[in-house]
Image: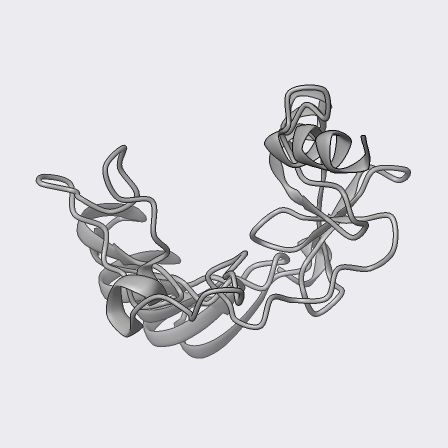
Length: 184
């Protein structure tokens, strides 16, 4: 395990995970729960570095039944999912706590939003540096290298460290048109 960056603390039998334990992946994701014959088996929870978690019943390393909870407490519903649909685009924290007063827009589900390092993007599970094409966790740990598809998506849609609104064509912007008319 040490060779691939993983670690395990817990019960063992014949050198394999057996009983209660905590397995940590190189990404920082942790499994806490029951193991058998070196695999996740029984009740266990995957705790992701983003703060979200997946609670499940495992059989021989495969999740058979489980539920996913986002870091903000929102629980994923496979049926009747009504969060972030075409009719309601509020963040979950806004649904729970109400909207912020006028003039205090909420740009992310975390308020105040995280400060993004210069030249980088906030891609929801960490910061992305387009020059190195590396995603690091908010704590600064390496998460992954972005492939071309992820790079293009992040650059096109994610919040930047610099003042530029994502996904807005300045020529079609209402703000730009109103500034033009006020200077005439």
